[in-house]
Length: 569
Image (cartoon, rainbow, N blue to C red; front, top):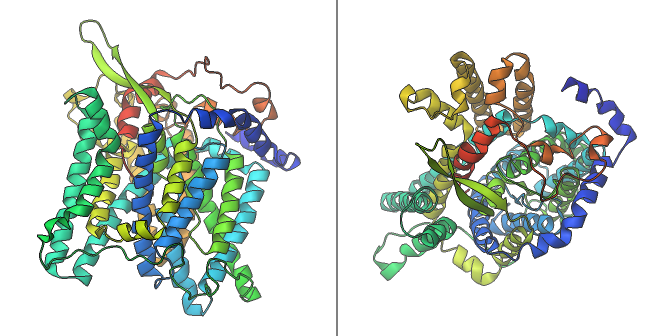
């Protein structure tokens, strides 16, 4: 690693190299990105991602609505997610990475509001400058190839961040339900809890039947896996209205505004969707720079990690990656979001890897000795295209129309809470930290003979898991305070710990516990050496992407269990 870092100084002499190689590698595949979308897997993937993006988006809209005195509402958050889907569906180098409004950016936005509003600073012009400064920083980072440092992001940091996101979803679900008791009757609060539990139970049931059982006929299991959770949300959204049998007990719904209109005209939004960002003091313009640095650090980690995970080694991708160009594109959308007065979108976890997983074509194979054969699922291929990302962005934009906003306003908040629990719990079930904890507390005689964790010395396994939990606690803890604006600093600290681990852990142990999030095929464009990008890109369909025995285990068994079980965010 030190040898590669020593080359950082030479980056200034080759600005734009990474962006050039990204565009050069991906451009020949642009037409096939659309023609390959003529595949059945794209249909359930689009429906799946529409709900997976929409429901958290409107729940975060509720959070922002409450925490910013109605400055942000449903339309602002919908427009942010729609812009991310449409722009990245059309122009991104890696369209598998789903972009939208995330939990961390919602926390960032309302924390800035709580800090700046008491000073009398107009919020939307100030946020516009935060986003514009951040756009400049994004472009500089992309042009000077600093995204290359993501090559050294390991599973340690990615798994901790995913673990944190899962807990945020569980927490948001609980917060939604506690509000029902605060703003309604006890009966309404308990009914919301019942609805949330029903959504969670049935949503997870269809996933288990469709993905992890041999019940029913194969196409029926596929239907449950593809459409079970969205249909559960639709059913229980209408359930509370069936026959008016609930009498006087009503559930709180999501507050919505007019079609394609901003939620408020306050805080510097007197001119509709266009923020007059020049109507602010010079001092506040420069005061926005520290916040822009924090936003850039957050997006540098969050978006690029999302891109890495959705191109993980368990997915047999054949088209090249794109990091520098996509980060430059993210900077442009961040600046546009500031001018429009909407939350800036970025890569979503776990929606991005779930998007890839929903596009996987799985098959079965027999492994093990002849006397004890084991039938296991494996990912044979991935439908790599940009139709599903673009289409779900258009669908979210269409949701801002009057009729669909009316329907959206009928969705009980208890349904959103249940959906959050599905995302959080299934995500935890598939996270590597949970897998490590499960291994530690499993009776030894029930260990899988193929699990590489058996080769790790117990002391180092315990220390590794302890460091994971400490880092998670730091990330989760800081977001519960006004210091949440410093959350990106904690993310960078987790990266530093991951980089230092090989110097302290035995090599044989750390190679099992940690390692690159993606394989060399994906990391090829994250290189400090021009020679690594010369010649034909290793993307030929006949190319064999080698994996170690450890990665083979993770890809075939643990990879499916860890990623596939994250069946809905």
